Amino acid sequence: MNAELVESLAQAILALSVDERSLLSEKLDTENKLTSSSKQIQLEATFAKLVKQWREENHGVSSTNQMSMHPAYQQIIGMGEAAIPLLLRELEKKSGQWFWALKSITREDPVPPEHRGKTSEMIKAWLKWGRDKGYIC
Image (cartoon, rainbow, N blue to C red; front, side):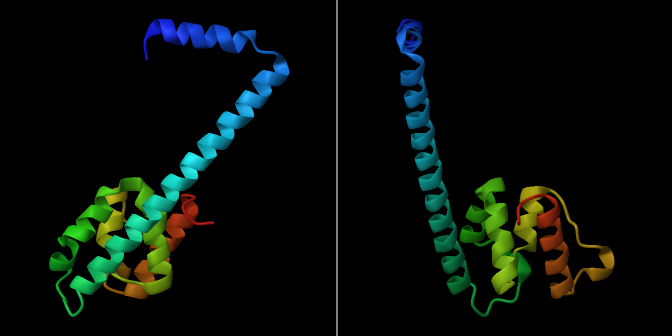
């Protein structure tokens, strides 16, 4: 945006009455919420599609390395921090092999060494981590 346009917009906003500014502010807040909401819906749909693809294409695969190197799994990791609550939800409802993705995204591993290899304990540790970090209510 060029400087002249910004200046013109600023002057126009300042010329508004207090009530008009308030209405403008409310409208912008509503539009921002709608945009944020639609982005979240799109993110969740993309995540669900990738999880479905990953599950279908890895049915019967036992190699953690092979499963975690699958393109859909890598795309989930590529979603970054936004995928964390979705991954934790997947752990909560269907278990799965999401530990690698969570460790890759968060650069953390809340699983104590004595619980590694025990899926139910690993899930508990990650879900506790998620609650402690505010990803799960």
